[in-house]
Image 1: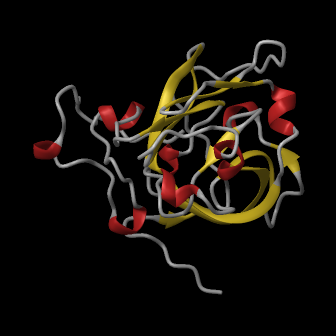
Image 2 (image 1 turned 180 degrees about the horizontal axis):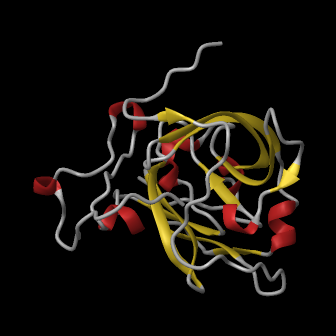
Length: 214
């Protein structure tokens, strides 16, 4: 099957490592996953709670804003929709921010996404992977161990939070870590939505000086 590269992308067979901040060192005793925001009551999950959720195996394509694309990586993980089932959403929730560790802060990194786009098997909190050259293995600490969000292929990979720690449910589309710094609110690689139009940036946005992906 012929794959289509988004504009400005180059194919790689490797899985490059780029991240912001320190590599999180997993501690199961202190690790927690939080569901919060526009829901009736916050939900706090332990690592065991998360790993007891239903799982799927899915093969996906990844597109990094730094211009590499990797086709056909297979992941095992928990679908985003399984976490939604645990939250009693208030009316009009349409967006989420997915959080991850950044320099010791469990909510230091975030990325915004539309809720509707995350209901399939291609929106996944992953913990192990394989591809044509690699057998099943845990994702490495540098790739986001113990849990990393992989977004659907219609989003650049910075929307996939490493060292995932929670989901905030929102009625409005609020920017995450890189969006505040001038990245596009949508981040669709096929539309080459890398950076926001400066004229459209809300108050508080900074400049995008370099490309990074989680």
